Image (cartoon, rainbow, N blue to C red; front, top):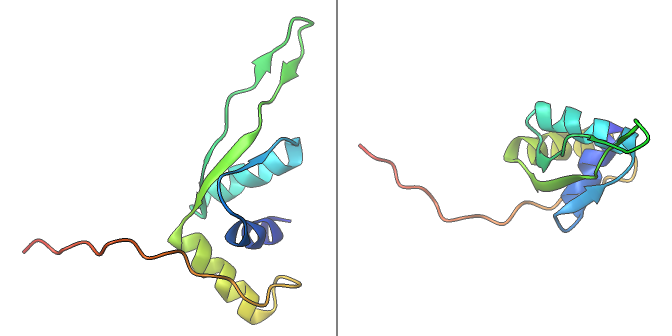
Length: 97
């Protein structure tokens, strides 16, 4: 599921929200691995003593995440992953010497 989600995120227009618990857990793992940047709010306590988890929102797929998704697509690790688009290039940083 993680690899499919990472591939899907490279194809989606961001930000993307994930309301389900299993999706939030997957986003958390991808975030901790450095593949995406995301906001995952803390669970809220409800009046009846339970908990409610607000949706996680992925705001960016990192360069590491894009490289990983491209490699997996080339190796056939993600079904249906034929082409993964590159992120638009930002202005190049100048080296300070």
